[in-house]
Amino acid sequence: GSTGYKPKLWVPGDWNAFFGLGTNVLLNVLVLSSLMLFVVQLPGDTVFGRILPALAIALPIGNLYYAYLAYRLAKQEGRDDVAAMPYGPSVPHYFFVTFVIMLPVLGKTGDVMKAWEAGLAWAFLIGVVVLIGAFIGPTIRRYTPRAAMLGTLAGISVAFISMNASFEMFNAAWIALATFAI
View 1: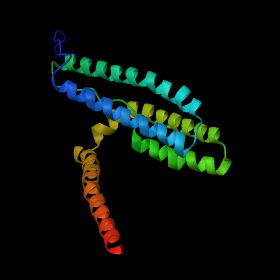
View 2 (view 1 turned 45 degrees about the vertical axis):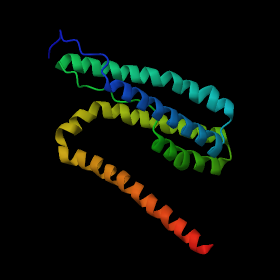
View 3 (view 1 turned 135 degrees about the vertical axis):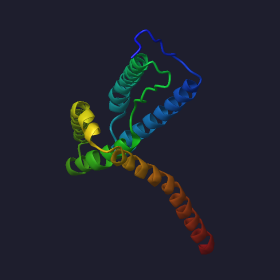
């Protein structure tokens, strides 16, 4: 790589990425806060006094670290087309944790804090899995055919694209049924 190369720190497309990440994180924080407050019914002081402040610390640190890694890679390879992976909460994961981990614990114990502790335990386990993946991931990537890795991504993409059309058809059917029922 070219060690004397200085990558550009900001390019025009970065504004789009900045506002895209910002609005995405805002929506994700609203969804996760709503799930915790209204579905699990965690106390407001836990959501606003613990969860959101921790997220406010983790988000900048995570995004800055990923930006640093992207800068280091761009400098090492002498490229200006390297982008940092966005870091932030995942709404599908929050739905999973809420409805598959926390709500069953809440239903069984009736204790909101036990449900929160179960969610924290799940987050810790996922962190351990990700940490292990950081070490074995490159080996898995080396031996897994590219088509196998991209096939999963393509399948997920097709599912998301088709779900929009499916929901539109479902809504149209309900509107038609409601119209004829009146």
